Image (cartoon, rainbow, N blue to C red):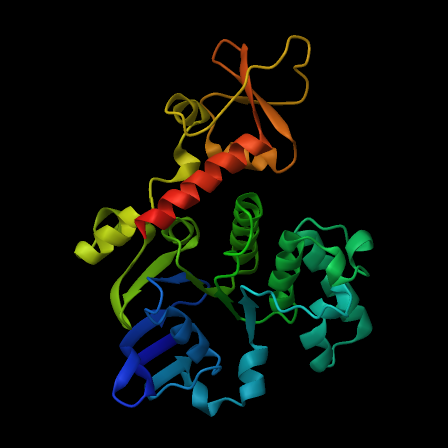
Length: 326
């Protein structure tokens, strides 16, 4: 368990960026810190592994103050994933993943087996990717390697600071799925910073909404969505466009003009199929593998097709709308 007791941080005396935080993060929990820019969420995250030193109060990990840990011991038990990825470009995928295990003097056999396990867990063929240079990978692949590198030495806690915000919508969606699956599989405690309310609602077991260095509300996604504490929470939910994209159907979004579709030419209907009452979540997953997907109605008739370009256009518009709201 991670516990904050009366924690404050001030870079300038008398001007705290985080004030009197009292918070418990449970073992095995996916805990999300969210709020507007400058609210103190990243400072809160970085105080956990002492990248930033708290000014007053105490942070405990497993009932022991973090100041009582050897800093190397503390950080070895905390994986860390950044938005900037921060992989070593002159090293292979395997060498990047095994940085901490090597420092902990794991055997070569242990490290080899761990790399195999981790690459398989994110759907990358170990024979194909193990010896690749980082520069040969796409942005999404690099961020996947960043995630499994944080897991490599089997830490109890994973800290993630807006790890997907620089990715395209499809890569971001797929990585969200990967991280959620990995967290459930290995039961790690994840502390995740984001400014995207939809991402928080999708991933978090509990969400901590912050503003001006203070906690405004902590709760499950349903509690936050259905029982916002005050106008700030309600406004933040609205600005985040919280009607879940994955619950909207393909047919709904085509009808209201948010998603384009075209009717296929006769004799060209070959490939993947979805129903018009399938969700956008299913469409995203299908178009991550195929360039186009055909849509059928309830009578099993093909009524159109949606391409990757159509989906990207829709997602880009959704992001633009959110940006205007913020």
